[in-house]
Length: 93
Image 1: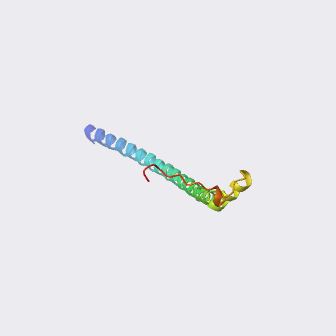
Image 2: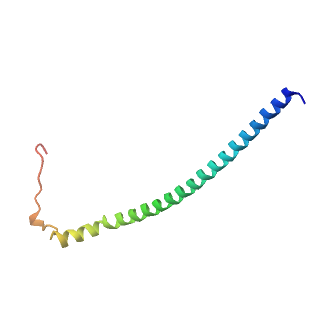
Image 3: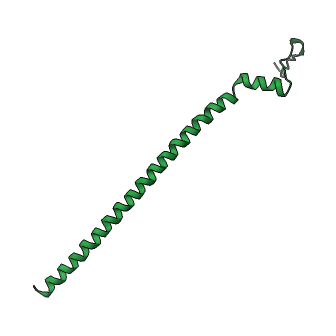
């Protein structure tokens, strides 16, 4: 074999090895990213569950009946009697 052919053969062998290493690294990185994606999907699902629970809790705490009951109990508030209601009119009305 000629020396030039041997040089090209060695060059091509090095390129094949470098290419193989690049493929292995790419596959490894792909698997790492896939695992991270799955972890983030699980975290997103957990946050979605927590968000829905908070929406339900918010709805319960903000219900008009609950607010009225708390106002009566804690603040000793009550609905005014008819003689306690004062209507204020704007000027020009």
